[in-house]
Length: 368
Ligand SMILES: Nc1nc2c(ncn2[C@@H]2O[C@H](COP(=O)(O)OP(=O)(O)OP(=O)(O)O)[C@@H](O)[C@H]2O)c(=O)[nH]1
Ligand SMILES: [Mg+2]
Image (cartoon, rainbow, N blue to C red; front, side):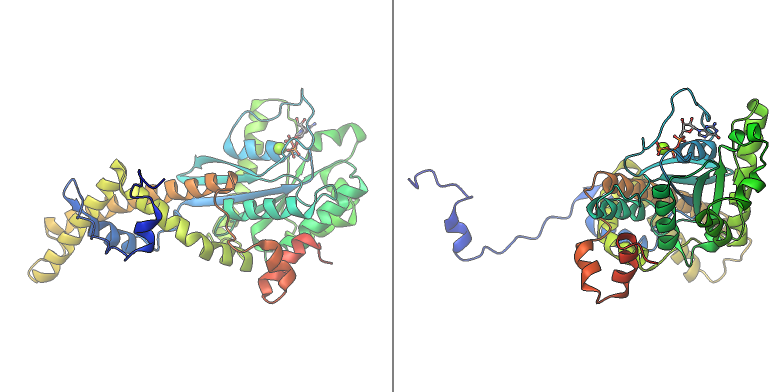
């Protein structure tokens, strides 16, 4: 015993602490370690890509959430051959680029159905917040134009009490399956005016912003539907000056996420794309300081033009880093390796010491 004691054995640990040698500065393509620290500091504010549009889909089982998601993404849309209900078991996200903007569409399961235990709801709330950080630009309440069961109505009521007030400007209703109304000789408007109180309340709280969707007679009509939906989304973005919905839960999650984001950025900066970002940063910085010291450089000099060009190139590289980091966070959130709340949510709710607790409690106790 004790013969083959290596460096892992207890003697070294319990003995006098060895002074850690400073790590030698590593060089990567002319970049030294301190450059990474400087870059991270500079990149600190770049937490979300400027052109990102986050859309949150909420609705009961089988209401048409995936269909709406596909419409936004421009995927093949109405496949009715296989009836689905409750297929979406956990939150997910998908992305597409539309008119130069990156749409991130987050689909959730019927979060507030009475069949789900609070533990499941907590996990899913954690996920939906993590996937839409720092807050969704648009919340779409997907409402099918069919009769809802009492449990579904209850779930809708819980959804609207958890997301209002505060989300009205960022919310809309997608009234789906309107094709089932025409055989009954009913218009979507007539359906809405005779709908359950909870649906009317949701429509009202979305400032009566409703888009009608249903099976169509062909591609042309399908495209028109998509266009209508995307137009409403874009006009909301314009009207809100691209402001997204946020609340205390999001704010707390955003703070907790900082450490993950910094780690992911650091990792990114060591990739090929990251190294070229660092090089660009150094070049731009060098050019800026040369310009500062050379008072004779007028605004119209070629140097000025080059700096402008370089700055725009740097912006593109930074945006793409931010995009990658945000998606890595989302992947982590989905796999539950990253949680937006470091504190145990349940403890936070029951402690009631912070106002955030009461917000989150609305997800669990379901509010009024
Ligand atoms: N008739 C008709 N059927 C539709 C329409 N939209 C969706 N469906 C069908 O309704 C079912 C549910 O649609 P989904 O888009 O999967 O709904 P979901 O809310 O994502 O459902 P889950 O994720 O399973 O809860 C599918 O069988 C669809 O084909 C529509 O406008 N009209
Ligand atoms: Mg679905």
